[in-house]
Length: 444
Image (cartoon, rainbow, N blue to C red; front, side, top):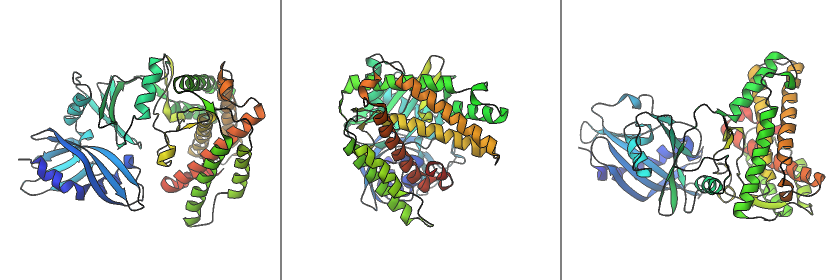
């Protein structure tokens, strides 16, 4: 017999290691010293049991983060096949009393995910459940290839931008986001959202990767390629400009402050430089040269407008559908400081994110091709230049977007270049901590 109270009693000792192992936690190499339940309840009793809780994790560096957990508990006498190979998602085996129980992440359990679905949408039903494992601050389950349930792992008081922003934009008629079908909120926290699952769509990153491969394989100029991405890039620029106009309409504008933005950029640079200096090997960041470029942002007399922005825009955050582009995931950059993730800033910060993504896809595509031929590298660089120009043409070409930007073209260039540098500094910091072999891309 499974006694939920017995499981709850031992979880504070088990969860620090479990949370630190999860990609969605963002813990990386940081040590979690303790976990405190904020609240907990039993959603389903029996075998299996479903436990639901929010816990506060305390890190050794003093940071705190609340996490949402759905935990399954099953008798260890006969374990189901879905647990095979799921060591990362397993919390613990509790042997007493025999035959013991296994505690695990319930998002991998096809039976218990229906209970989680019903918490969010009581009248919903589904037959086929498919968990999606990604390196995000959330976990998702697809039901019958028709709906997708997104469970937020990192949670905090107040509305989650990824719930609030699509809802508000859809209500005012912006067509390029996915509104909620149902939402689960408790104690002032957005916890789960159910949305339509788009079948037959292609992630922007994959579409661009295919285009790069086609160019390198054909050996022809990007505009001659059968998989030319430039028309899609131009339409994506138009969609992003429309997004910014809609967000400005919904949440208002205020004059941009180039000096304040530059100060934030300089702080990001100082943090990255400190991490760089502590790593083994020579320092990689040209700090003085970057700081000099960021100073130009601080000196802008006209920085355009400050609006609410996406905050983490790149090619993996957009989907190409039969009806055009859709913009996803408004949660902000997961490795930014907590107070800088859900932010207002210049719309050009989002533009810079997409330009950096175009650079990444070209460089990753070139590396995957595995050729040292300068002509091949020239094709990859030509692909980036063409699609960069197309994206910017679509963005700056939308009527009305100029009202959010500096009036002079040279000031727009200065501000955009600053945000591109800031994004590249963030990328260096991220890659050094997660994928050191890719740090060369933002360093370039």
